[in-house]
Length: 114
Image (cartoon, rainbow, N blue to C red; front, top):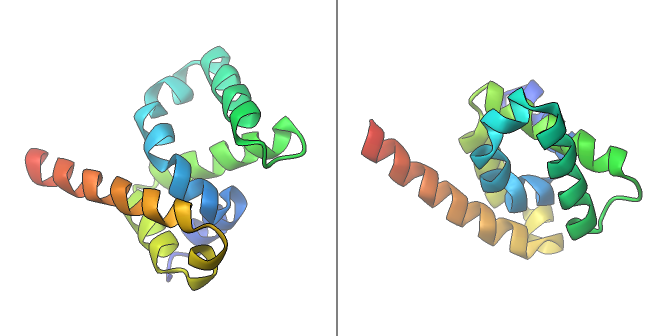
């Protein structure tokens, strides 16, 4: 990947997180961006459901990193990175499958709305 900022944010979020949560974060982006209370509850919910972070700060970092990817309109590139990563395929196969589905949906939306 040539975009070093996006690569850094993928690493901060975690490839598994990008794959599994891209559609969810993207779908709630406006509320996350504009409502701090909503964002706090959203992060708490992911933290409690995900169970991968030792504290909620880790989940907050993941969400914020992925939001930066969305802000730079790099979600497609981030998903493609996850899909193509042999390490992520090996360690988080489900994240790759979810990333493929999310990318397929985004491509449909782009075709629909031009």
